[in-house]
Image 1: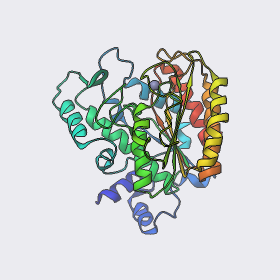
Image 2: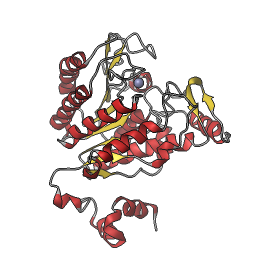
Image 3: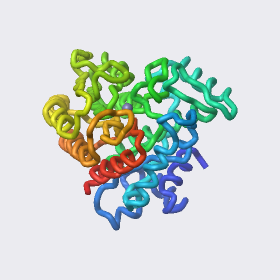
Image 4: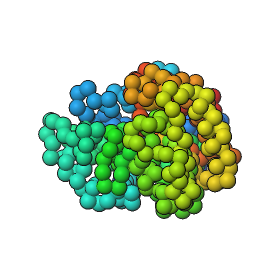
Length: 353
Ligand SMILES: [Zn+2]
């Protein structure tokens, strides 16, 4: 079986091999899933995989496998999961990882992880803990996000959420930082520009920390607009309003303790007008949920309902500008209850609930 067919069969597993072959011959115009007949709404996709649990970090480390476990459990228990179309990873992610990260860095991550047995090591700083499978998982996270991008571009899903880890927005071209190894969202943006031929991609980053890695990747590339709200002063120390790139970087630093209203205002008054001018062809969200008031690392006051509101605003931008094409990618969020409830609220809005 060819790799493409194998992937397609897995994607449409419920339809069986014969139907998958038929779909292959038919091309992308066909119905993506039999459930579509029962549910006329365009589907929201979800990416998750047990592989993402295998990036183990030092005991007590805030970024750990149970984060994704809690999200998946919550989506299942609430009944949301059965309305989502599970999307499979794209093949060949390493080729795209090296469009953002240096090949030497990618190799260094691989060697560092694969030389570990049962233990842990630091990668570049004490903020990045790795274990033997960390390279495979970080590559798998990128593959998941690129798979979702492909499925949104092909119209198989309208939008989607990627419950991936490790997170990405601090990762620099040749350095791991802040729990991040490969910059999932930056790689997705480059993939949209180079593989899918788009000209304008908007990245919205509402993680409580500034996405220094994403900003660094695009501060000299006006095809990508990067908008970030973040606590300031706070880790990693970047993200001042004066950091404008080519005019395509829009940072909104917020004081400690800011909540729903400050975030809503930033999105309504800063993001919306900028997006109206930029006219994105695709919207990516660096969806960190660590500005939640129950998060131990954030020091902010955003509520679960606040994340739903932000999602509404960004979804409306995508609806007006690019037929709703939007992919949201997990970044931070360290209180399992707040994280899983916020993701559920976020995904419900993506679904149109
Ligand atoms: Zn964060």
